[in-house]
Image 1: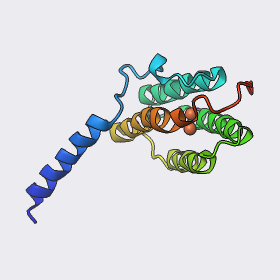
Image 2: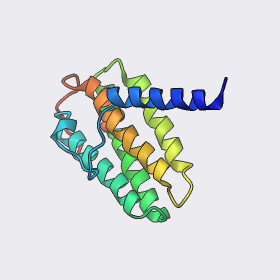
Image 3: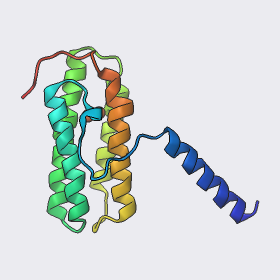
Amino acid sequence: MPLSWIFRRHQRLKEEMKEEHEEIPKPFVWDESFRVYYDNLDEDHRKLFQGIFNCAKNPGSAQVLLDTIHVYRDHFVSEERMMKEAGFSGHDSHKSLHTKFLAEMISFQLPLDAETLEYCKDWLVHHIKSVDFNYKGKLQWKSEK
Ligand SMILES: [Fe+2]
Ligand SMILES: [Fe+2]
């Protein structure tokens, strides 16, 4: 199979995926379209956007990356606790997506390159709208904070 054919096919697949994919906000900040209607989680999600935004501004900073990882970890813990307490059936598969992403973040090399930052942005946008949105209306209203 010619390489050019594989390349073109790959490009086509990427374009098709983009059509289905959620749009990445520019600048990279939370907006109302990401609301899950649990105030503590929406507040956390704002911080997740801010974390990646900070990393993009300081791609060489281990401290900024570490702070961002902590913000993600704390959010994942809160979200998982709320899903667990509500007996939400998607808890386990959702948790494993969190765990996988955290492991990826921990293994990032500094400075963060454009591809890695784009991956993080895409992950967050996709995760909130395609995964977190599944628990909308199904958790308890109790805020953990
Ligand atoms: Fe999540
Ligand atoms: Fe979330």
